[in-house]
Length: 180
Image 1 (cartoon, rainbow, N blue to C red):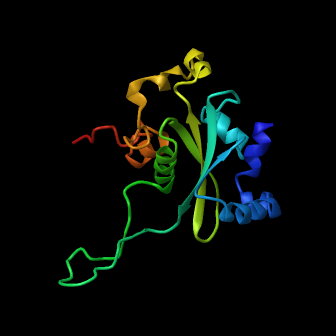
Image 2: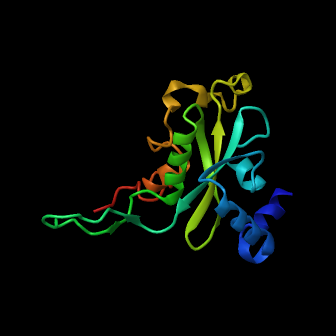
């Protein structure tokens, strides 16, 4: 079943069509961070570590598209670096993970994935884990996230999206020394 869901999500606007369009219209009216009952993309959530059990939470996040806009210089001299737009050194997905982490400070961000975009926004779903939940503490596959070393994962570059923006995800690429 997950294989067929993944195939649909390769081209969501073509394959899902009206369903995806209606979702985006509904999501625009909702808040920036919305807690959900179940993931929109079950195949992607499962591949990133989500399990349908207590202690796992899914939250959808809305991020503005485009580069960051710095406030306009109000008066006096105009500095050399007064350009209005500049790009962050992290991806929109990493920004979304940080935003969720601020909204749910008692939970840990496990991972996130893309769910849609329109002209002005991008949406990501983040998988959050409650480190204080007894079910999570007993599960030997996920109990590593209960450690104090995993606090603030999204802010310290420990999630997959952050590692990718830092160039740490492809171990073979770029890690070899250049021969002279």
